[in-house]
Length: 336
Image (cartoon, rainbow, N blue to C red; front, side, top):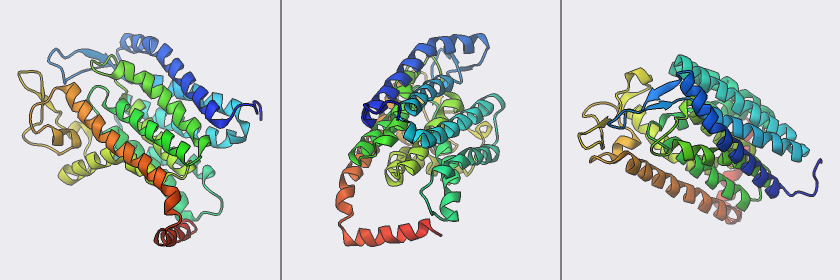
């Protein structure tokens, strides 16, 4: 071990602070370079339609990478697992870049994300079965797409990411999984910093480069930390949003989606026709964009707190005979 005097929670804090600083310092330059390269988009949810830099996920990815490399350097016993997660997040980030530039179809994106999730198999528990191994990249592909779907308003994706990572970090600390907090804190630091530039009125959008890696990080933490139930809970806002969209319109490409509209007062209104979504569910009456985002964040906080409560209850669950029987069945499933 390179720095044996540092406990895991201190390493996690250092990784989080480094990722925060790197993202915060790099974002102004990234915004400037993206605008110069004309990698920009129109913010359609404002009456004056400002032009905003796209693909801000570069900053999140940069900060996360530095944070993770720091963790690898300071705790070489965990180097393999941390390297695997870093490789997966970088691969997902590359897919996000390609999607931002070339607009991949839903099937292409799902397949590429599945491939990106394959390295996570090497971090699976020993002696697990084939089904469990196949589920890992499938889960990564689904999770990445979930955080990519609930998007479009200033700060909504990065804000929900901050809430999810905070909840997972606290849950892992409660369960004594301090090693996994290196991953969650590295992503949390980058997201908190990015949110400063992405909140209303946004100076930059995350693009698929940013939204996909949030889901990939959540799924990676879920499998490596064995906190899959908690990860599922914190992803519930995204799951609800996806379920509403699939129920109302099936699998859609972005070109088929009609965006949320503005009324004469500059407030968001849902179109009379089109798919359902979590955002449109709360737009029963016209709402300002920043207020709509706060409501979505509030929903995320509710599920985040629920995830933490589940983590607090887990030690007691082990003593429950019914739950113990369920866990035995679950363990049998792992070896199929």
